[in-house]
Image (cartoon, rainbow, N blue to C red; front, side):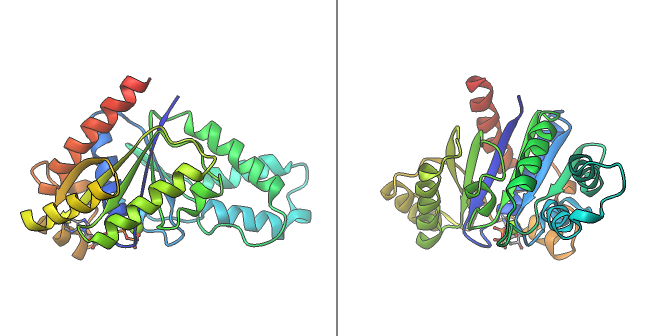
Length: 258
Ligand SMILES: Nc1ncnc2c1ncn2[C@@H]1O[C@H](COP(=O)(O)OP(=O)(O)OP(=O)(O)O)[C@@H](O)[C@H]1O
Ligand SMILES: [Mg+2]
């Protein structure tokens, strides 16, 4: 069974960045191939990884609904969907990436969704670890378009608002039918002790369990500004080191949970 590490949090707190650092970590540890899932309709997981997306799962679903009667002769809908999904997957030596795209609109998606879900389940079994970047609203998790989450990392900046949003995400997840094995708060982009103290106090008040902190990293920001893939960050980057410590703990917990 593969372990799915999902990342959530308020807009702009560093979710996609943390996802890239997670993919980097898993590759460095030899836990390959990693499956990266972009569950944010804005599609930017591919950018921090340094690859391009041609098609999304949502795009395949919409195409099928539009062209239902015009599939190639002799091809079943299931086979067509599978072929399209395979084509939409970005494959590299160390990781594969699939983007979920826009969540469905109105209309009958039940059949297509059940095919998609089955495909995702089969797909996910080919990887020891899956890393999923989510949007703030966590559409795909709350709609059940994805499988159970082994560990949810909720990222926040040091602002009380960020931490309160993190607590709301925790509460939302607890109300959903999707199973989540564990959850932890990551405080990101911290500038100084004072900031850290304030965020920690808010986290304590909201009974959020902290799994680690990541300082603001000028080098990471430089990479971002130059549009360089974050996978290329050196081992001595402050953010890489801090994320590795967090991920040692997460993978340790997952190994223990079996
Ligand atoms: N530890 C850090 N040090 C310095 N800069 C950081 C750090 N973490 C994230 N950033 C920067 O913050 C910005 C937002 O990060 P990112 O895109 O990962 O956030 P996000 O939560 O995925 O945003 P969105 O909600 O729009 O998807 C980026 O410019 C990124 O480079
Ligand atoms: Mg993002």
